Length: 101
View 1 (cartoon, rainbow, N blue to C red):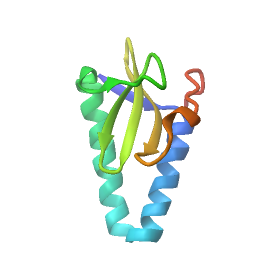
View 2 (cartoon, one colour):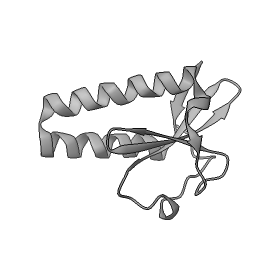
View 3 (cartoon, rainbow, N blue to C red):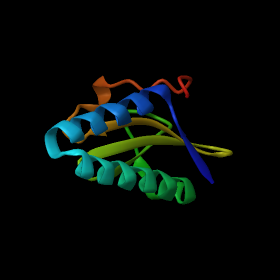
């Protein structure tokens, strides 16, 4: 199976990577980014391992490090909708299912 990111998820990934570079340095940020993309691949292969996301019906969530990956299943794979820090209120961060990259 495959995965793709919405425009918002792509922006989230850029933001968290930039924050990681500033806070922890380039090598650590690159390592975390690579681990996230490997997690995306895992979710594409095993989409049912995530839990239902009650704040975002039709989506699942999966924790990776200090972030929660919100995604939904489609026939061709999964769509990563958002990447939110665990301290963020998920209900106040909308997911637009039609906003795909």
